Image (cartoon, rainbow, N blue to C red; front, side):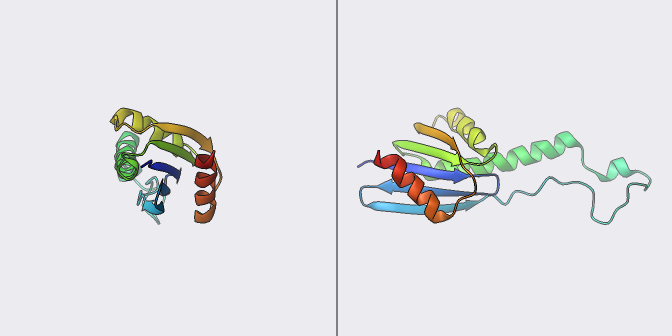
Length: 134
């Protein structure tokens, strides 16, 4: 029995379609990643000790990277064991996930990585079906 997966991903959510001989299953993963934190709401730049109120850039980046890695690991857990995976979506998340799959050595074969704009769930399903029908 062949198991094929296609997923649309950005930094906010992932729509995963797993197709087998019995049919298909759609899964949704929301990242719950905070937006890049900055100043506290309502604070003014002219205040004394302003630099101490904003977290250091490297600390914020490490925190964001840790959240993204947790998110990507959840996505990889859903596609583990697939014979082929198609990754598509806007932005940098596609490449970051591809890199994370390579680092995890989970045995998932990536069929392709494509750029795609925002898509509805039905459009994602249709794209995955069309790709694996060939």
